[in-house]
Length: 85
Image (cartoon, rainbow, N blue to C red; front, side, top):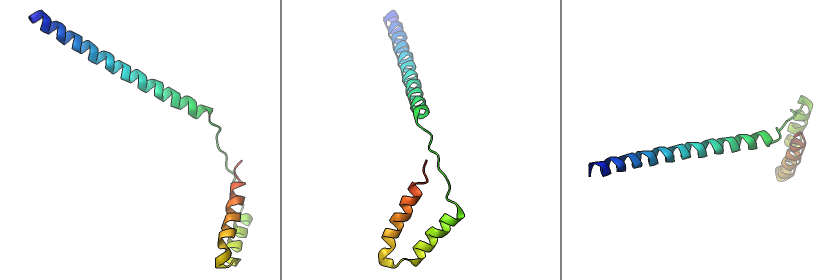
């Protein structure tokens, strides 16, 4: 009976350690996959608008009537989107 208990404890300990090692391995594989995905992504580069362009946008927003603001905002957002390289 004593040998059976000792064998059962030994087997349980071995299973616990092996499952823990598997979890660490899965975690490392996941981290490696994320790092590879990040390395494969193209870096987004943004160009800042100059002061004149910002001033033009402000003037355009100030000059438009309340009912036309949506279209002006849409136009400004399109121009800002064009700054993404």
